Amino acid sequence: MVRKLTDLNVQRSIRRLSEERVRKIVPKIQKKLQKKLEDELALAFTDSLVAQEMDGGNLQGELGLTNPGAKKAAIEKALRDSVLVEVKQVRGGIRRFFPLLRLTSMRDDFKELLSLPEAYQTWTNAKGSEVKGPPLPWLQWLLLGGRQTIIRGANLIRGKFGRSGLDYTMSTNQPTGSWKVPPEMSGTATNNFLTRNVKARIPAIRVFFTAVINNAVRGLRSGR
Image 1: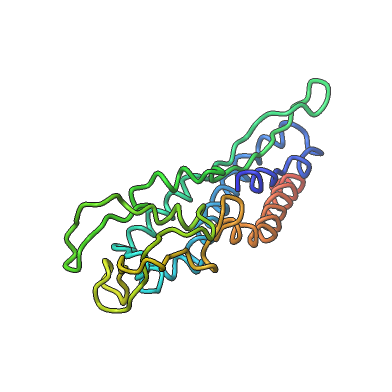
Image 2 (image 1 turned 90 degrees about the vertical axis):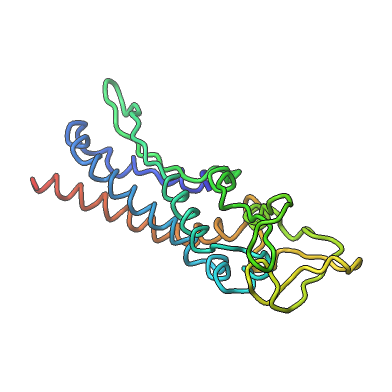
């Protein structure tokens, strides 16, 4: 994701203006791009099938996710906080420097998300009390696990006894059974529900960036 967003720089669109005039518009452009990128990255998650299925859907039941609202809020905040629009000076000729707006976001290893406490699900019994057991790295499974088998020797059985209180529980008395992330939600580091949704939004982001820059340039040329 970092590479895709880093490619969206705007230096070519403002090089024709004088250095002094460019410096006047850069902070405004930077602020607008920061806000837009934060919004688009957050929407790439909140509009996803994963986000919908986390709260009352099959994914919540299969993973036993509790407090889905808190989990979604934490993920959205981490995505917004990961956005950075930097201004760097690059040489544009003899004794001339122009600002380069560099846009970056989530690391390739998704550390910002996978380090969240909400990226793990603790074990609870049918009454909602926490029980011993290693936390389930459910978000890592979705983002990086692909279609590998996550749990062997178990099958999902319908009934009111899941950790989330939904219609699933994991029966471990099934030696031939297994569980994988549903194919429509599974992914790898370079191809998961987040990277796919961000990629789909890139054209609209480019259009927005171009419009912001062109408006700022027109404003300078007209004296506004």
